[in-house]
Length: 112
Image 1 (cartoon, rainbow, N blue to C red):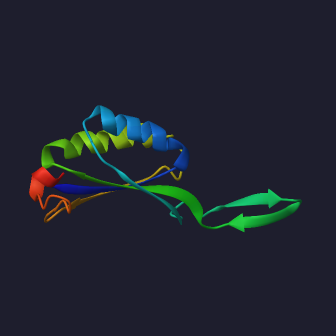
Image 2 (cartoon, rainbow, N blue to C red):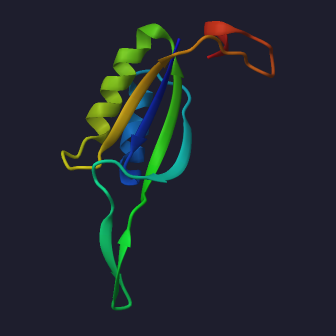
């Protein structure tokens, strides 16, 4: 099993969620986060005053998938989240040692 963590632009969330559903992903955890990378923030004007926004709003997706679905899920995220502009985000893939469904105590692939 794999844990896919994706950091994307908030307005791409619906497109990414739909793309993941199409490839058979049945569950996603979504968290609103803030951060920066190469984008380094931007300047905004509010009531005539200019200020620097250093931490930009992003959305963090956490997805647990079977090994056979991982590549399809990553490709779906990349295609749906890409705008071609700086700040599109990142995808991290980690091996997952185990998963247990709390309600039924199912383990492994059965718990996903």
